Image (cartoon, rainbow, N blue to C red; front, top):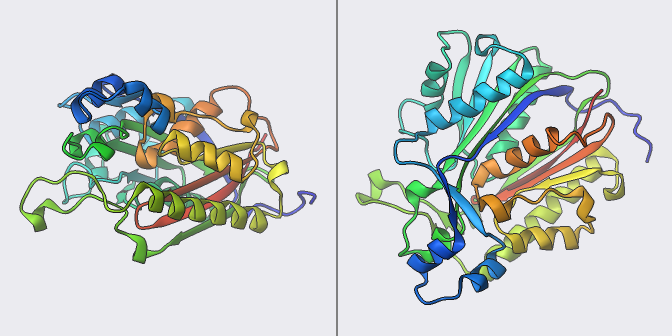
Length: 331
């Protein structure tokens, strides 16, 4: 189908960044703690993860997010004081419940009453939720918008729950949004939640349970895979339909990457050729809402993206949250 329609939401990615904090932790290291005596090669084959990065103890969401945001602003050729909205995204509640962690990020960036700073949590789909809100803000005249994701999963892991301990990693990523030019922008944005399935992956509120909490899987790997597969396929196909394009017309696909097996499944089920994909999970592990923006930053800085190309972003997370977007690259 010819691309003649105007974008749903005109918006431009002005700058991106990504940060892997602390040190690289090998699967052999986590395997020794979580599965003593097990062959690490078997765990690598099952998860598709060879390393993940765990931040130093003194690292906070605010410090990590501010580091990523500074780089994205620099690449956009902007000063932080030009932002009119700052959205901070994470899956685990940030540095504190009150006030919003975004306040500390803004303070680290030197913002003093120049924009609003808000937190957003929609599990691993959180980046897409923030991108939708940010794009709509730009389209209605509120811009530039900064979006920054910080994930410190290592703070909420323990070898006593090996399923989560061996897959999660820490990461941050940021981007700056401004007005789109011509047909540039989101051709489709489709986001949904189904609270009936919210028990698949959980991190309980320590203030309610009165004990330290860690990330836990509440259902079998088989059930998680089935639910996630269905949600991702529905999201991708719906976004393609809304944009009026086929998968063959999409130039790049950036999915959420919870593990290597699901990444391979997505490519197979949607018949996506390898040259349209950017695999990061093997190096960084499962990094929650940071997975897609880390991929986006690496793609944007690769020099391979061309004007007029279409990028499919698709995610699924606990909640269950899911959705997809089609972004058309501008000149």
